[in-house]
Every structure is written in structure tokens, then in C-alpha cells.
Length: 122
Image (tube, rainbow, N blue to C red; front, side, top):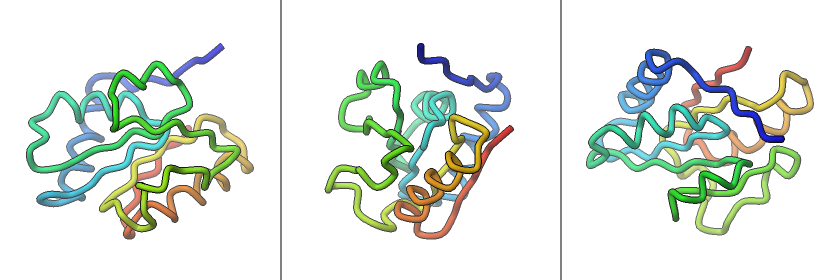
């Protein structure tokens, strides 16, 4: 019952490139419900940045410590190692087009980001 919205390769690559530039040298990037962008980031030479994926779909747990189970219904139920304001940029694509989903996802974004946000939504 899990259906992911996948960007085209071109769009995912463009978004991945933008967040790398925004994160800066040695930057930390959080992908909240944006698995196709995360995968494009993993394809890049990640020596200059680190990335974390927050995702409901546990199939992404194959990425090990970079994977964080995320349910927007409980926006601040995050592991202790995800410290407040510890990511240079957060890219997010809330899973539903509803005010409630966007508000709850925004709580997560505000908690994680140092200030830079790239929000994608239909």
C-alpha cells in the first residue's frame, strides 16, 4: 500500500545538485520523504557532503544508518542523534497534499534545518 512519488531522472538530478550547492562544503543534507533525490545524492561522490533520508517506507532501511523511519503524523519522533538545527539544508516533499500533512512536515523541517529549505509539493 505504499506508493512513492518518483521524480524523473532529470528533476531528481537537478534537485540533488541544488541541495549540494546549498549545503556547501562538508554540508549535511536531510531528505524528508524525497527518496528519488536521496538516491541521486547517493550516486554522486559524497565526499563533500553527508545525507540522511527520513522516510516512512522501510524498504529504504537498506541504506543503514542514513535511514531514519519517519511518520509525518508524529513529526518530532526522531532519534536522539538527529539534533535540532543540525542540517545545512532540508529537502522535503510531503507525502500528501493536505494542510495537516504540510503543517506536520514543517515541524520536522524547522527542527532539523539550520535555515535552508527546499520544499517540493504538487
